[in-house]
Length: 501
Image (cartoon, rainbow, N blue to C red):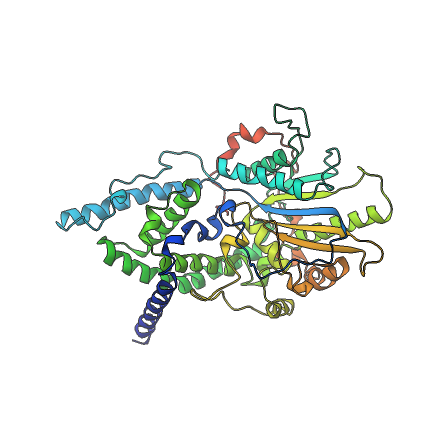
């Protein structure tokens, strides 16, 4: 009895939230762009310019010179995986059954959207999935061009893999993203074709032992934790699906289940992001409902991949160590007067949301000052609040397709209070860093002491119950790719491949 009363109370609360959000959006429905509310399925170009206009970038490095750049980027927009393609084909059959039930009961079809009758998946019959699509190639290609334009002195040297290191995971969409970025970064620098392209090296570690970019896949403790949290995520997000399912059944006269609504929301995200179609699956949901579904996605992201548990990001310590080591090498090269062309100037990495999100958490992005202090003391944070309340943690901003963090190391004149500074850009924009007193930059030593050092006391192997020597490598440890991905059959997902963002 008590359980039923609690369920009723939760449903009433969701109804009140829907009403509140509806009031908020009632005057702005015409300007509401669902493509800006797709959590991590958002396309980069749609969301990269969404920012906090109240934040003023720091001026303390205006007279400084960039000497090194670290980039951690997610792959660009990709096709649905093979598993998801099969699910969409099954969902087409399910929609057919729902419409047939209405017809057999001799009910009116007037409320059913025309597109829904006879709908087939746009990916029907496709045998491969998960690959970088042309929009994703474009995202990374132009990102490469913009990075070179923003930091011309860093990319003025003749190309050499020891100067411009490009690393990726062994997942084809990530390596393809690295190639697209490199084509933009080095365009006009070579003699290949009318675009003046040049060959460049892209290297990768084996999936079985890549603790720098695929730490999530090598960490057994994290896999166990993630599985244990799935019931919690379901309990927190299910009331949203319950209420929206009730509303859609009432509005369209189809006997939708929660699973149907979940599939419709997934379809909406794929159609809107990959195909720019917003008048089919997405049109079934009001702006208020989209906001709640987006929040549910963001909440799951927070719990399983973000600040919801320190293991989510502490397992990224090998990546953080790699970033700091590259900066220290650049400082040594500067201090000891290494000859131009003899030291690294950029370390460029291409991976997944499961890489970018933990790294953002390690450096304290998307936190208030008080929250930063909490995670430094290894205390838990509050979950992102439901709409219509505002929140910093939004999947469309923290990890859209091609989302990225750039850490730029600057050398400053001797009369500056510090000789070296670190500036952080997220999605190419300066972003406040709580560990730097809310500025987007701070002295390198302060960055190391306040932000990095508390994490480095944790050992990856101890965190993850891992003995790397026991892992058997069946793939080569490193490879170079020079546009070969375009023709490679490995762009297809293999059956054993886990679905990743």
